[in-house]
Image (cartoon, rainbow, N blue to C red; front, side, top):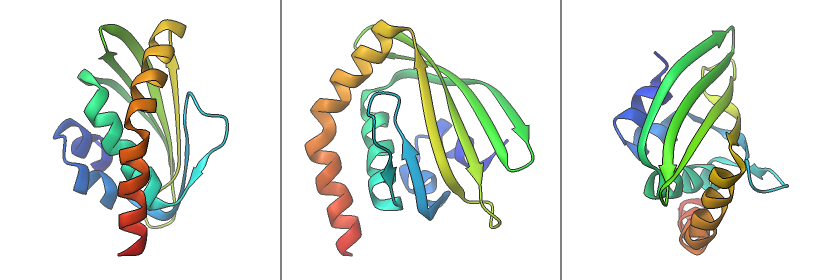
Length: 131
């Protein structure tokens, strides 16, 4: 089991951030442009932890430096099924993080919930960037 999965399942946001490379690029299922860098990615992941309910990984697929972590969760009462696609750099840290979710109603619920988190996410990322 990958360290990131263990951190998520333990709801340990510091351990989750420790799995990220400084140059990680996060691609959201609901935003067009990717988010580059560890501070914003870690802040987004903390925001996700605040909106996901009953989160659980169901499967981990490993192919060399690539991992696919299939999950189920709920957001504001809507069921969401998704997958975290991770690429690991030469140090074993996540340098690419892409999330896909379904169905459309779940993606919409996630988009709405994360929009409410975004001011806090930006503030947390800025604080981490400045420290």
